[in-house]
Length: 262
Image 1 (cartoon, rainbow, N blue to C red):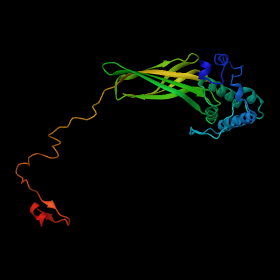
Image 2 (cartoon, rainbow, N blue to C red):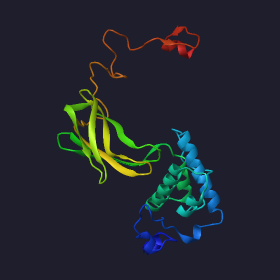
Image 3 (cartoon, rainbow, N blue to C red):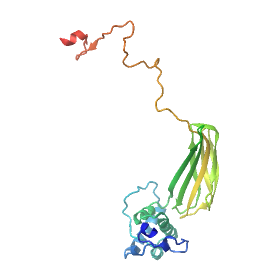
C-alpha cells in the first residue's frame, strides 16, 4: 500500500530510522550524472544566503537545480563550508519527512540564513460565556548559522478578564519559558525562551496557550433608531409643507411640475 502511495520508495526505506551519521535513503533512479554539479550549486546557494540572507523570498517556480542530490554528493563538494554541508544534509532529511519534491528542496536552500516557520496551527476553544482558550503551535526550522534562543510573539483581545494568562508548551527536546515584555489591559507582548537553543539545521515545535480573552459575537447589522434616521421615502409629506415641490430644470432654473410639460 505505502509503495503505491510513494512511487520509487521501498517499504524498508519508508520505515528506516534517520540518524545524523546515516545517509538519507532516496529513490535510486533519481541519481543522475548531473547530481555532483547540482550538489555544488546547492551548497553554493546556501553559502551565499548565509553570508547575505534575504528577508523576503518569493516562493514559486525556481531556477535553482532540481536534480536529486544525495549526502554523498554533498560530502564530495570542494570549497563548501561546514555550515552549508550541515544545512544541506538537514534539508535532505526534511525532504524525506515532508515528502518534498526536488524543486521544493532547492527552494528551501534559498531561505538559508533565516528562521523558517514550516507550519503554524491555532486551536480555539470557547465556552458558553465567550471565554476562550487559544493554543498556538509553531513548527520552526533554523536555517541560519546561529542558535535560536527566543521567539517573539504577541496576543490581543478586545475584552479580557484581567491580565492574559500565557503558559508554554514544551517540545520533546526543548523547554519553553514565557518572558513577559509588555502588558496592557488587553494586549500582551512576550517571548518564548527556548532551552536548549535551536541549533542550525534543527527543527522544533514551539507552542503556548493563552487564556483570559473573551470572544463576543457581534450582529452583522446594527439596529437603526427611527427617530435618528427617518425613512428615506415617507409615505406622507411632513406637516406644514406642500406635497408638490420645486424641481430643478436642465439650466438650473426652478420649475414646477406643470412647467415640465411645456
